[in-house]
Length: 90
Image (cartoon, rainbow, N blue to C red; front, top):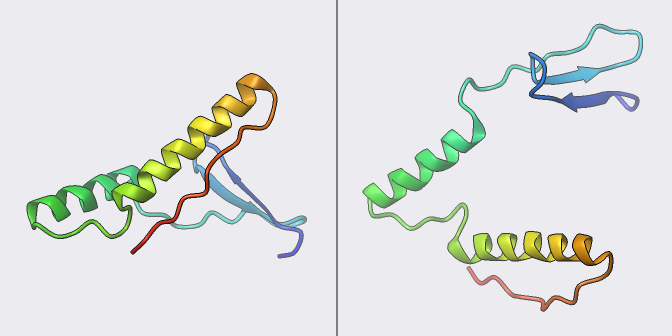
């Protein structure tokens, strides 16, 4: 498996393939549900059941968005962007 290649493309079916030189591609069995469906389902069930959201706490989501915004700013300015480290407490 050291020379295997994993490819994912929504432009073809199956989306995910593992290729090993000299062998037929391996097609991993995946859930029929898309990842976002499971995330939204988890979020809605937590709200309806009045449970805390543990998988993607709001602070973690905020930091993810801030990181993407910094990456976009870095690309647009073609340089480094100073960011402040932030601590997530659990």
